[in-house]
Image 1 (tube, rainbow, N blue to C red):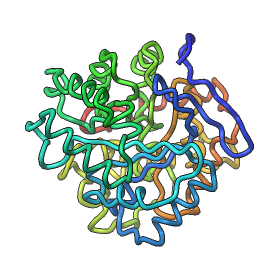
Image 2 (image 1 turned 45 degrees about the vertical axis):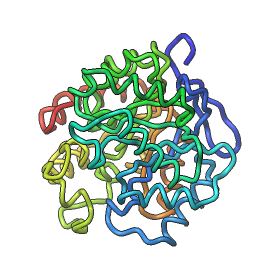
Image 3 (image 1 turned 30 degrees about the horizontal axis):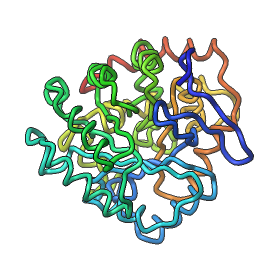
Length: 338
């Protein structure tokens, strides 16, 4: 990332792209989050999964993000079996599987995990492997970073990064010279990274990957108090953090409170801009962001996400108003820390 702390934006007829930090990859600024392909947002059949990946190829979406634990490897296997468009980079994650998490990390264990991912994805070398929300004490110990450097030297991964749950964990990772990317929760309901983390990442030339941009769908504006989620959907079984960090579901908000906040946001959104596109545009207006991994459960949803890239930037006065609104109305409601 060049001096000035922004990811360069390139344009063609299909999709704007940005540089992914020190990886050197030029990736679509709207990427594809593939958690849904593992069935963790409710059942997704093979035909639907294939249609989603076809739609991503057709739209010029060139950054696909998955993990070894999404559907027990199902997401990776579906991606591995599917044809990729020109320039597609697939990122995966490791470290939440039962063999490693929470306190059994070793270089050999990580190697085995990455080899399993490479096999499912059908590659010899992984484009990008990210530590997947590993516990803070493991990050503070630091040995895991050295192992990732060594596995990169072995040729198992081209680049490595980290996906974190909190600002503090992200700052630890940014101090590691080998860390090429940082994946964070960043959306209208979780704005804290804008103050310190994004500028620091730009300074270190670390690409920023934004996950949960729509706060598990809350910011799509399509839910109401009658909405119910399948038993296999984390928005059901992890609504209060029963299975993993509560911040990973609805950005740590209680669902009912999130609905009220979405209603308030409608009054701030530019006229005729759909809620989801408004939420994604807000993220894109932070130039340190390299790509947004927005997940979809239906192929037609992908076109709605991509359209956010085509909107003009939000006015600075509105950005300031949204920041004030977050501090007053949203941040006090977040559970699980930021």
